[in-house]
Image 1: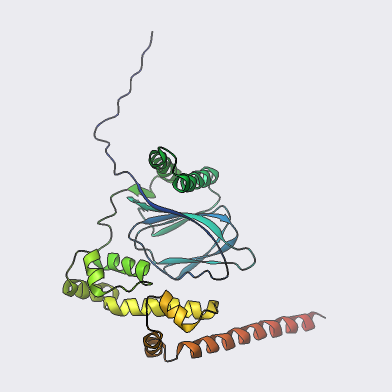
Image 2: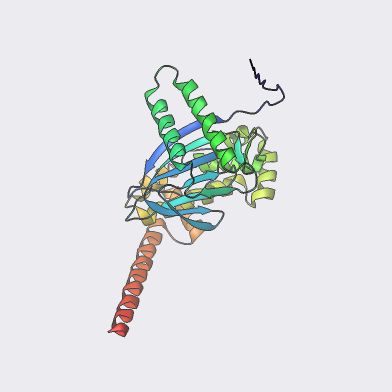
Length: 291
């Protein structure tokens, strides 16, 4: 008779990953996405379509089947193709990070189908909330973490993410997530457990702007996006970026851009028409050359 007994050492304690949220998104005409950061990791799976993923001023093409891992503090956003609109699942995960890169796109992974299945199941469990759904989500998230770590073991680390970002980047992440609300310097300082004075000093040193100046520029960046990509009224855009007064919004917009919101919208439309006419003329020129 042979007997084999294996024991798990008590020294192998790990920090388990924690699910913060799960979302499912499909590109629509009113889609707006501007560069932002998080104080945690995100895992994104492209379910359908194609587009561009922008991280730290670098553009990478993404398409169906791609899995994207984004570490805390990485400035990122995504843009969809208009003809093949993006659809994706995304998980917000604490205590999981990349060890070397701020962002990694896993193309054609042999575990791609399983990753997709797990993310869909997590979304379903969180949506329906049957008995024991929280335990199921925890177990699926652990399996997902192991798949990622074994796929490229040097790439992922289970580590408490509370202290990965310094106060400035935590504050910036908070602003990126809440700029559409009427937040104050005190709100931001409370979030990172610093006094307003110390936060302002650290933020200015690390980011190059005061927290409130960054908030103003963040709001204007989103407003520009809405002015170009939607037909929303100026008042609606002001409200969507956290400014209750449309007149104050217009004043701030002009101060930072040199144009009123309406002037910027009109100027952007003229530029877009000029680009389209240039594209058409270049194609006509090529066509005539080949005749």
